[in-house]
Image 1 (cartoon, rainbow, N blue to C red):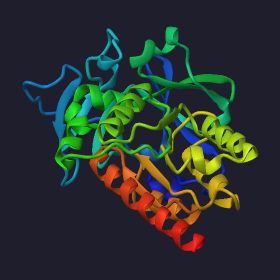
Image 2: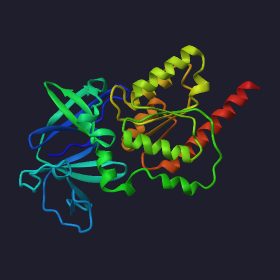
Image 3: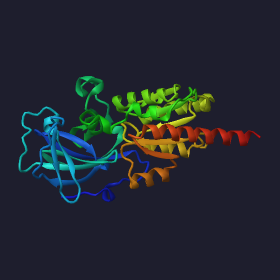
Image 4: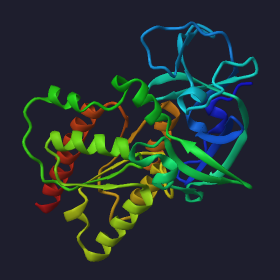
Length: 313
């Protein structure tokens, strides 16, 4: 069984998502299909010492050595021992390829991001919870797992590191208003801490694209758009409104399209880059690259100020 990204990418800016449903202990979970490279029959795995308990080991299906995460064990299942009929979901995000062991794969549902609700703390496990959304897929409620959060816990060095900002050297404080859409509470905190450390202290954080879009509309109506949103940074995967839809809305609006917009996502691939460019994104970066994000923000704001200065002459 194999599924390729070329076969599943959706039309840009429609605010739709395809969810692959899978089970662990007969409980339905979901993953964004854009993160999925292939579904493979499970195979023997070579144990690696001194790793997280959920890291089962490595295997080499072709010419690539891939880390295998035992998702049942990570989620606390008592039945996490490998079974012959288990499947590996081979994923690609944050410039990494990782296989996740699951019990079965049920199918794929196409839904709107508006059909995905943010779980409350009871379900998600609080601010550090692994459930990023609850989706209504047909008659079923599916728990969307935060795979970035899972990998960040298992291997912190692969995620955003505030220490990367130190490599930029001394930086002055920047009062320029920047708005950021990021649904993961953990990553939102890390992004805010990193940008603050880089001097960007005038930040507004939003949990999804819809909330940020409503803020932009309110500022547009009040005539204070430029005073409160000089640059936009957005994730792609978010409940209610994804980053591609937000990008399309901003760049299609005559009064907003001049605002520089950066897509900062774990999903940046060649196909996704084409999508973002078609929608008008000014830059697109993979999420671990927080130091590069700061440099890109500096350059875009400098260019924006220069353009305003030319228009003022």
